[in-house]
Length: 94
View (spheres, rainbow, N blue to C red):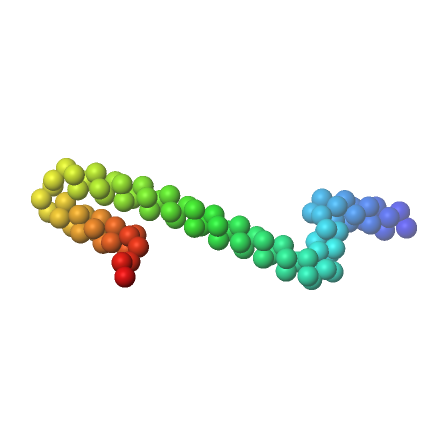
């Protein structure tokens, strides 16, 4: 009997350490689970959008600086890329 009790106490410690109670509670409320996953997805999407914007801006500024160095072969290629991006960023005229 003592062995069973010690194993139950050990199992309880393990379950408390990994917060199994919170996980089971979350699984018992499917609408809350959907809501939390939706919020997490929106946050990830927002983070990706902001991060991609910052990385793209840095990349384009580096390309613009390389183009200003007037390296013959690279500068023409970079200038075309920068022009294409600027054309896409300007609003269309009707």
